[in-house]
Structure formats: C-alpha cells, structure tokens
Length: 332
Ligand code: NAD
Image 1 (cartoon, helix red, strand yellow):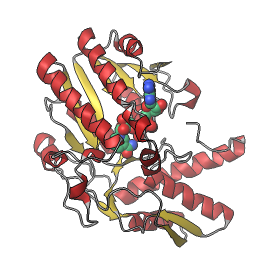
Image 2 (tube, protein in one colour; image 1 turned 90 degrees about the vertical axis):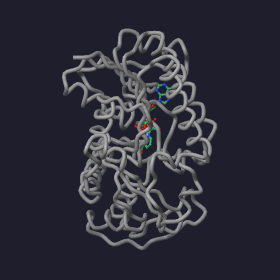
Image 3 (cartoon, rainbow, N blue to C red; image 1 turned 180 degrees about the horizontal axis):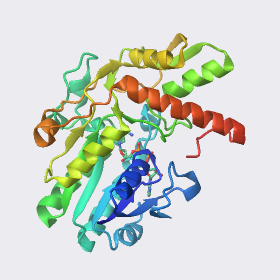
C-alpha cells in the first residue's frame, strides 16, 4: 500500500483515478481547486481537500507525506475553451512547475504528468487522412497554441527534473479521453460528451437538428476512460521516462461520431455545419508502437461501446438534473 496524491481529483480523469487507486488498496489524497460539492466524483475513502495548486505553498502542503503524485490539474476544456482561453491554459505551467519542485523537495518517489496529443506538430496534422502520430512527432515543436505549448513545456520540465534532480517522472500524451462522469456542458466539454448532450437535447425538445463545428470531416481517435486509467497505471509501474501516447487508434470523423450517437439514441438529425466554430487540426491519430512494445497492450475499447456507456450516463445525469431542478451539470 502506498500513499498517493491525485491533483485535479475533482475533474473527470482525476476522479476515476482516485477510484482506481482506492480499489488497489492505496491510501489516497485528493486535491482540487473546486469546492468539494462541484467535484465530478467524491470518494468517501479518499482524503479530499480544496487547494489552489497554482500557489507554490499549496503544492508544498499538498505533497507532504505522499510517495507518489499524479498531476491531472489544469485549466482546460474542449476546443471551444482552449482556443478562446490561451492565457488561462498557459497559466497551468504554474501548477506543474510548483508541484515538481515540491515533489523533489519532499522526496516523492514517482511523479505523473498528464500531457496531451495537442503537443504534436500542427504541420503533421493537416490532412483528415492523417498518419498516426508517434512520440517523436512532437518535434520540431509547433504544438497547439496556448494549451499545447503549456503541455510541451510541462513535459520538458518533467524530463529535466528527472535528468538533473533524479525525480522519477512519467508523462502520458492522452488522446481525447471520454466516458461517464465527465463535463458535458458549460463550455469546457469535449466532442464526445457534447455530441451526446446535443442529441439528447434535440430529442427532448423535438427539434431534430444538430450543430456540428467545422464540416465534420476532421478526424480524431477517442479513448475510453477505462483504457486511460489502465494505461496510466501501467506507465506508473514501469521505468519509461519518455512521453508515451495513451490513445485509441480507431480513427473516425466527427460526422461518424455523430452517426454513432444517433444510432445509440435511435434518431436521425439534420446536420447544421458551423464553419467558423473552433475545430482544431484536420486529423489526429495515435501511433501505438511504443506502448505495445513496452506493455504488450494498447487501448482497445471500441468507440461504439464506450459511447454507449457515456451516452447512458449523460442521459441519466440530465434527467436527474431536471428532476432536481438543477439547470445543468455545468458547475461540475
Ligand atoms: P478536468 O477539467 O475535468 O480536470 C482538471 C481538474 O483540474 C479540474 O477539476 C480543475 O478544477 C482542476 N484544477 C485546475 N486548476 C487547478 C488549480 N490551480 N489547483 C487545483 N486544481 C486545479 O480535465 P480532465 O479531462 O480530467 O483532464 C485531466 C488532465 O488530463 C489535464 O491535465 C488535461 O489537460 C489532461 N488531458 C485530458 C484530455 C481529455 O481528453 N480529457 C486529453 C489530453 C490531456
């Protein structure tokens, strides 16, 4: 049994990670900036508290006494958020920087940083028919403006804290993680959750139309939360200090994603395309050669199966919100 701190534990991935670590029998500390009532999941078995990890003293206080630290804390959201809030995204460098210093000073044994496929060179993602991105494709550096630069800088900080100070750092590049217990409205939601919500809203309002950002031809791979957690735990149990893709390689267009959700909901909607909305790069997929060679494993949940579970959870949560008179889940 270890003492493990999860930062950003009130968010989507952090909430799932706290549950997984408790399930393994560890003693888990959970920290987030949000008040506890707004956490995506609050696990009774964890020691949960509210701290702003952009503050150096808060990081020192948070990591004290822990063997391992997982850093999921970041000011982030889907394309709509990161394209319009570049400075806020970049301010998350404070979190990772202060946490690394605190981890080094406290003698933390292992440190995890949640990076993103947004670090990849934009020039390698011009076509919807994209060549899957291998870890080396982050250089020469031309990441997503704002959010991607913050992640790339965070990766480099981990690398140099490992090389210069001996901190055992591990970095995952997540590719579009989705699943139950995530944000689906309020402006920070990502495409899979947004599509589920929009389809449910259209059905409830009997207005059988859906707005799609861009022309829907842009491609992505979407990674189910269980695969994300499994891959992250594997990474933290090994000795890979280089950034590692944790991403599904099942490439779909946004139009195909919408069709999957329509099929789950049993409806067909008219598609209204919004070419001026943020849509990100034209194509992105995960090359899983490295993760397969290290662990003999890659994310394998079929998108249709993961979306089914995600849709059901969002539908139930929206119904709960309606019954409770809560306008939406946007405060989470
Ligand atoms: P999330 O927004 O649900 O969770 C992030 C949490 O960090 C939030 O609860 C937020 O309140 C907290 N936080 C922000 N600033 C903080 C601060 N100053 N102090 C303490 N807590 C703070 O996001 P998520 O989807 O769970 O993502 C977790 C991590 O994984 C993030 O670093 C994100 O950039 C990265 N990532 C996620 C995805 C994805 O598709 N979800 C993809 C790539 C990378």
